[in-house]
Image (cartoon, rainbow, N blue to C red; front, side, top):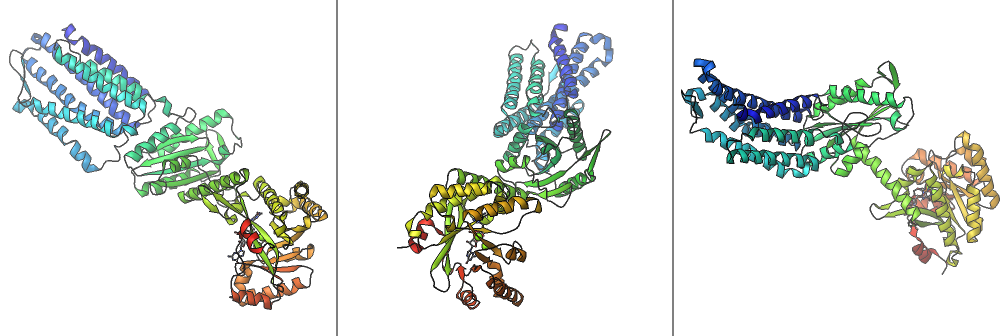
Length: 639
Ligand code: C2E
Ligand code: MG
Ligand code: MG
């Protein structure tokens, strides 16, 4: 008896160890692991039944009359386990491939019908005895319907293998190896038992297969972020891949802690780790179906697969409540938090792997956002931020590779009809993004070193242009200066150096300026202006009539030109208040030494109007759009 059940004994002990170890592990893939643990449990029962069955046969006389009944019961339980095992196995593969949640109810109803049918057959066996029966001398006979159970096992194992092949791309290598290894071991041992029926190793084979699954699929520490105890980036990518293959819809909510991202250290390392673990647990309590990822410092990504919109709404509500106070209470501490939440629906909002990955690291980081310490955004801001980043990179590249184009728009003297000057404007021609206009990229780099580099670049290109004799009929070129450039104390020096390098007189450059600057920077600003003026540069006031330039500036500083913004002209053509304002401004400026440039003259009507008003110079599409340098020289240069 001992030799007959030796393998079953071993199997039982190994299974017990697997079961209890598996139970103790931190449960990340809760549902999936529960199925595997059930599978192991079924095998334990099977081993127990097998041992019991053998014992009854061996010590049959001790059971007396009941021995037959006991044999039947143990066999029946063993049959039940045998019917359930392949079903659990196929379900487990569905889970590992990440498609379990993607399936509809009818699929499961259909999928589990054979199992339910077979379970019914086993339970009713004492009545019909078509599966097996024992005769009085304890001999065991297989019934004529036993083949049905066998067919069911083949069906579920086949289905499992089919899922494995169909969704292989959704599984990581190690998991795949674990699964295939497990199947191979089980099949090999089953074959041994079939071939040499006296070696009872089939159960041992399944046990080893369980061990392989546990070690390769479940004990996957590579998926865990050691700090927060949540899933890491690797697991995040695997999740995205699985859902893409299974065509699952899901919600993602990123929760960014700006204090951690900006590294304003309120917490020591140890406390931060405890806080992250605490947050991970707290998020999990909000919804058991949440998958929680911690991919980059300070940002959690919460994922809800195949849930309804109301679950997302609820989650956002819960998070809002959780961070209602500016101080997050944790242990005995009150931690100041600044939280940004961004929600996205996949695949509606984000439909490429690239975008999904971007999202996991995404935060708007808008310090000016008026919504205080808790802000909720939609995925659309991701696209905007993404575009901004791309544009900024494109500008950086264009400056480095010197592909940024400087275009020139002529400025015409209305009295003579001749060209007097040109305004230098810029265009990025990016291989991926196409042509980008300054209205988009200038605001992105305002206040950064990029705008300083851009200014020097434009000045150099204009100097090169001015070296051309065909430019002799163009008195000067206007260049736009951003306020940030003017508070750089070394700007004048670098501009003068460029002029000397190209041998151009600064009188041929007219710098367009707009806003004033904050009073803190006023000293530097005044200094730079003075130095530039001393060197011979002159100035225009740009965008006059918009909020960016004010009247006080007019009297404060000497300008070569005042440029009236196109919006003021366009408004004046339509409404009287603007027209009165424009006309009184023209009067005022005429009393000063400056000339007036009207920008944005597009139509005959506008041209007639500005001529009537005594405007000196005009810049607008009616004469020419900004032109590439070769085109400008051809059309407007001295022939
Ligand atoms: P801005 O200095 O007011 O330049 C005039 C803008 O009006 C140019 O737009 C020009 O193409 C446009 N414009 C001129 N005439 C017409 C017209 O008749 N109709 C219409 N619809 N538009 C007209 P652009 O080139 O897109 O530049 C936009 C702004 O970007 C400029 O406004 C300027 O503030 C800024 N910018 C351009 N290049 C530079 C640069 O190199 N440095 C700095 N700091 N700013 C620049
Ligand atoms: Mg301008
Ligand atoms: Mg302007």
